[in-house]
Image (cartoon, rainbow, N blue to C red; front, side):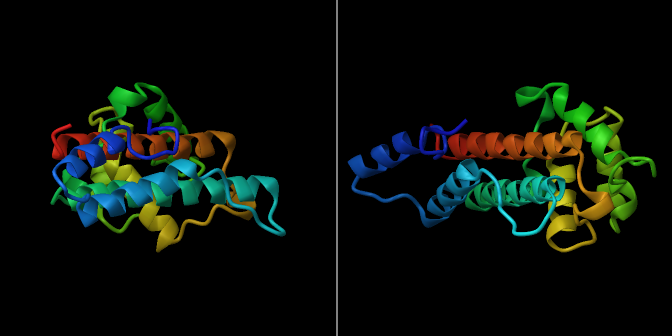
Length: 192
């Protein structure tokens, strides 16, 4: 996924074809490429006095924010809203995504982070339930919910709520899936 510098897979090809015509990339697609590159280059955040487990949880949540930002920029550049752009789990990460997400963010109170119970939107909660139950294959609603709950809501991966390795792996899969979907959206929107 992405080239050696973490630009979208066919970004250089896109830029070269525009240059032949004496054009520059559209501003919206340049924003997407920049956000994609940041998300692709992100390794981890460093903190002064957090436990290793807490720092890992925050790092993976930040990775999700960056990947979602790139995905959202691709959606905007293509004239669509993120909820109109599916992020298929079955293509890039067949069973892994669902298994990790079910373990980490299931709707039961025993789950590490009961995502379903943290949401105010019944519509979004229903989409997440459908995914966790295997009735849907779109990762976008769960990525959107986690992004929103971390950036604006109640989810803070610290202390007793620090994320397990399974949850961190689930966030990594979500981030990779978002970048993969953004890359495919870029290619299909630009005919490459």
